[in-house]
Each structure stands twice: as structure tokens, then as C-alpha cells.
Length: 266
Image (cartoon, rainbow, N blue to C red; front, top):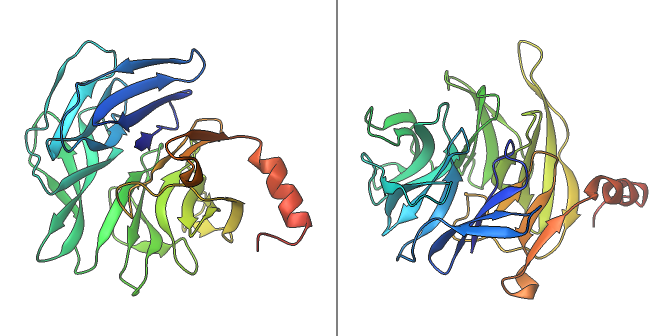
């Protein structure tokens, strides 16, 4: 199962379950099937306006309306080695990473309608994956192994002219808070958070801190988050030890205070 939650959409989540794309509203406890089951279904992301979902189906990028109308189609410029990751700067675009033999994983801006050809944003000899555009559209978060191990980095968007390392001692599957002022990522079984202050000419980052720890599933890919963060800071995750059951993590700030008082997570 794969999970997606766009921070600005209130308690509405998408799931890939049994090769089927579902939309679930937690408040009402309802779900809507957006597509029939199909091979290769996975890696979902919202569109910027929350009216559509882009995901892989038959192992190519595919889009579907989120209103349950059944409107859907292939993302015209998509290839079998393209993986949707994040809403783009407008409702017709997504941020994706593309696997290429020459340069490993690279980051592209793609038009859902085919209005423009895929635009390379970051192409290097290292593997860059899991790109996540911040809700305010000013920063691009991603994962890279350029240092020899997986770390989390951020660049200004759309300039992409300089990078800053966010994680310390390794990190995977990064995501944004709804305010664009906090970055989440995973380090082993720890969920980590880093504060971002972008008010000055140079961004500054807080020290990574552990929010909570448990055995949660990492999903289909090492770089694309297999968890969701809602607009009010709730985490929704698959707990590995309970099969396919879901867990929503709330009130984690109070738990964090207790952990810090006791000396941190060990």
C-alpha cells in the first residue's frame, strides 16, 4: 500500500490498495475508488489544486480526477522510468524523478496535459529522488547519495542554483509541513524534523530532532515518502508490525516534550 497526503488538503488522503487508487476522507469515514485495479499502480501524488491525482498505472504516469467522475488518462510526456513525486507549481504540472542509465535518478518538471516537454530541474551523476516542492513553491526538497550515503537536501525553486544539506547522519523520504517552515524525513525507524527559517538572504536550519520512533513500512521506494502529513501536523503511516493496518499519529508534540525531558530518543 502507498499513502499520499497533500498538506493543504484537510484530512483527505489517497491510497494505493490492491492495485486500485482510492481517496479516503477521515472525518466522514468514506472512500471513493478513483480507478479500477491495474498492474503497476503506485507512487501517487496530488495535483496542486487538489482536484486530481497523478500516479503510475501500467507502469507509466497516469492522472485521474479526484471527484470520482472517472475522468482519467495517460500523462502525455511520461515514460516508464518516470515516477510522480509531488504537486508542481500549478495544477497542470508535477515534480517527478526519472531513472536514466547515464545519470541514475534525476528530477524533472512535467506537464500533465503535455503542454510542454519534461523539463530537467536537477541532473547530476548522483541519484536524486523523492523531490517535494514546498507548499509556498519556493523550495525543492529531495534525497541524494552524492556524499556516499543518503541525505536530504533543499534548493531554491525555480533557481536550483545552490543546495543546502538538511539531514545529519543519513536521511530518506522527506516531506514538508503545510507552512513550508518544517521538513520531515526518516532516519531508520525515527521520524525526524528540521525547522527552516527562510526570512533572511540565506536559509537557516534547526538541528534535526526525533519526533517518534516505531516500525513503519517504507513502501515501494527508498526516496518517495510512504506516509502523509496533514495540514494540522497529523502523520498517517503504515505500521509494519500490524500488516496493512493504518495508524494516524496525533499529539506527537506532547510526546516529544516528554522524550526530550527524558534525554531524547535512544
